[in-house]
Length: 307
Image: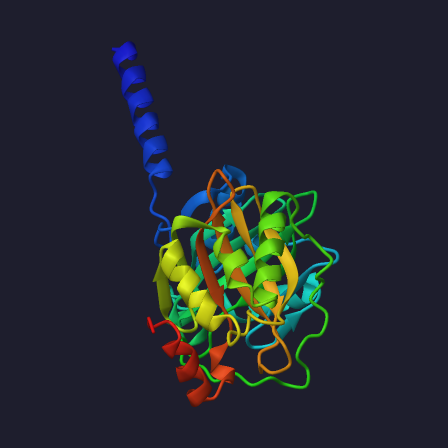
């Protein structure tokens, strides 16, 4: 009899453990982690879990207490200290509706630095935001630099560059090294020189090229080459642009860039996925096209059509 009781208790314990392990996440589990190592994928899973559960105290444990910087490059929001971040998260998270979620859709990089694509649902800030964030960690695995980029036009938000727009993005902090840095530097150099041939050579044969602001997608290296030949001289991340900061690892990451003074936005972001040979398999660009006039925006959109 006692043996049967113990067996039943053991079975119940196993079922309870399995139930916990299979407990549903607070957000859709759709993140593509093929270009991230397991450690950074777990970190972002934990980060966005407590953010979507609206737990600011738990969320703040992911940030370094000293020398941390968080900037929303599209709105110009600046939080230059742990205390300022703690204050803003405690201001809006606890009173957020249960359906207000923030969750990752793609992660590229490692525990040193990474690019994370994530979605904030409309219930969080009033508009759906699809964001490319550049994130760097310190030696203890805490976030020391987080810069968000999203397109205001796609989110139905008209942003304005205020006189208080940040000028220091800590671009010398947490830069990536190795293959992603080399590929990003080569691509940025080719873009800045309006050298479509050199840029195209960095892509794999079946690469995907996406511009989130223009809602454009170009498939395959040949089509990408034709697009770059007609577009690089006109895109904000093209001719005379400058590389600002690189994040990621051997499998991918991204780089922040600065356009020339001819464009109203101050910065943008670029996600890069790499294959085993270091060729770019997917590029995703984002910048705030709400700062462009409608005519200028439509002119850029038209470039994605084959001529």
